[in-house]
Length: 253
Length: 330
Image (cartoon, rainbow over all chains, first blue to last red; front, side, top):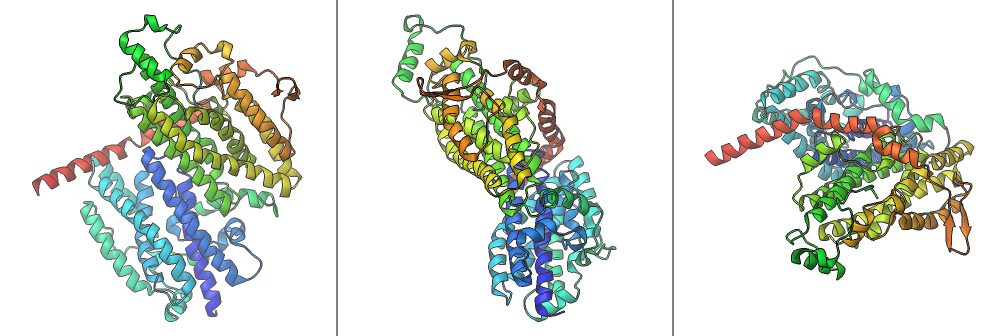
């Protein structure tokens, strides 16, 4: 694998995670617990779709095979998708949605901070812009973890269960493969161990404030997304999202 | 024009002589086009009518997000997905903005939303029609937002200050939505294949009449119009607004290369307006009474969101109370 191939693969991972999480958030329109939350969820989704587009545009240019960012997002099959298992998980209740969001935002925040120092200028530009948005995403989801964790007895129980349930999908983002190592060596992408330490430290602080227990860091963690091995939930999500381009191949909208 | 059949509670207009000194001063202010502001005295009927109208408008913005959500998760590319989500966000913002305007009249948002959920108050009949194809995202923007704009442009001059200012802001965004919607259809008609073109025509066929119904019953069947016009809550009658909308829209329809499902639609040189066929009023009242294709779904979705979110809102209040206590102790 050369550096360009690794970078292409890496950009898919970034773009796909943003896109799949945004799609999950789009499903929530009309279902939020308050109108203000409806707006917040939509804003986060808008940011993530924008970021996904930037990553996939870069990926498409790098690949130089006549595929556009739209082609990459709206025609690739499940096995070719590279998003984290974490983000494809169902919305569940509001605590589940927020647990997923917070674990992702915290990773996303530290990742984009690191990528703002990348040796690749295009990555720096996209990451720096995204970081401003994600700083807000993280503040919001962190606040909800605290509100629900230290709210009522019922919300505490739901929040704890949500964290415990999704935990097995949180480890994957720190397990490096050949792509990660190659790009880390080239100064393009960050070292995942360093990222994990920051993530863990912030997570522990927030959960403590939220009066929630942090599940064991050495728990068994599901993996597979980097090889396109997903949970069964992704196929349905993509079938819906890709319905039009797949039903009308070649049509322009 | 997200408000239909708004009841004023008045059977007939009072003459100036019949009015109390306060009422007379109020009416003279209205007649002089001076805006009424929240702290000014106003007749109870004026206040109640405005609450009904503004809340109905706000509810329509919120319920109106649902048909679009039906295609948000299936938008065909990045550009369209971003546009549609931004539009839905704008509608949520309009809802919030209108609820705030309504609260300046002493109404409570939660109470008014509860009335929506119990079926006591309505939202625009148009949102009880299903969005069945991607072309509907274009048609809703073009025809539905288009009809809303015709009404709201006039409402920028409505007598109640906060409502008038809300309308000015909302109109700017709605015009943008309308152009985006039209562009979706135009792109499909210009660059699309036969299936896509058929999708556009089918969508127009389904939304044409319901869009005309948005303006409400004929003037002869609108007992509340006279009082609303005297108070300048309404500035033009239903039939006049409907005619204005049709006159504006038909050239756009022709430019698109599509037709309306109305054999009687034709230019009348003498009147200087388009003639058009009779609306199926039975359908209109059926939908208003709750028997449209989507009435049950729409309300169930809204109710469910609020009911299922109650533990979240309770948690947020409990947390805020704890924080306040902590801060006080510190």
